[in-house]
Image (cartoon, rainbow, N blue to C red):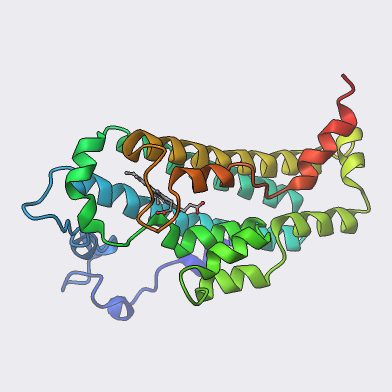
Length: 265
Ligand code: HEM
C-alpha cells in the first residue's frame, strides 16, 4: 500500500466537529479528549480515592484490546495473502501490545484488599468475564473448546463481535493453510535451514500465546493478591479457581507438539 490514500482532504468541511471553528485540528480535538476524559465515572459516594485507578486500568485495557483485535485482523489478512514477512512484522506488533496490556496490571497490584473492599460493592455484577473484546480476542486466536463456548453463553446471547470471530478460521488453521500453500510441513519448517521466515512466524505466534498466558497468570495472581483464592468473582464464578483452569489453555497446540519431535534429551 502507498501512503497516498491516507492524506488529509484539503477541504476541512468533512471533519466538522473535530476541528476548531477556523478549521484547525488541535491535540484535544483530534484525540476527542473532551469526551474521553469525561468517561471515567467513579460510582462510590463519597468517591473512593482508588476507584479512578481501578476504572482507568480497565478502560485502558479495553482500548488496548480494541487495538489488539484490529492488529489481529491485519495479521489474519497478511497470512491469508501468503505474505509471511508482512505477517512476521504484524505479529511483532501484536506481541508488543500484549506486553503493554499485561504491564498495566502492575498498577492494580498497589491496591490493597481492604481498600478494594471499600468500593467493590459499587461494581454491582460487573466482571471482566463480560468483556466482549477479550472473548473476541480468544475466539480469533483459536479457542473453540466446549468449556469456552459454555463460558460465552453464560452472559446470554453471544455478542456479534465474538460470533464474527468464531465464524473465521483460527490463527492455527490459517497458519496450517499457509504451510500447505508453501508446500511444507511444520516439522520441515523447524528442521530445515531454508524456511527461516516461516519458522520465525511460528515462533512469533508462540510468543503471542506465551504473552497472552502471561496476562492470564498475572491477572490470576492479582485476583488472589486482592480478593484471595477463596472469594467468588462478581461474575458469579469461583473466582481464582475458575481463572486457574484457564491457564493451561492453548491457542496453538501443534506449535507446542512439534518441539518434542526435535528435543532428543
Ligand atoms: C482489582 C483487580 C481485579 C480483580 C479483583 C479481578 C477479578 C476477577 C475475577 C474474580 C474474575 C473471574 C470472573 C468473575 O468475576 O467471576 C475475573 C475475570 C476477568 N477479568 Fe478481572 N480482576 C481484576 C482486574 C482486571 C483487569 C485490570 C482486567 C483488564 C481488562 C480484567 C479483565 C478480566 C477478564 C477479561 C476476565 C475474564 C477472564 C477469563 O474468563 O479467562 N480484570 N477478574
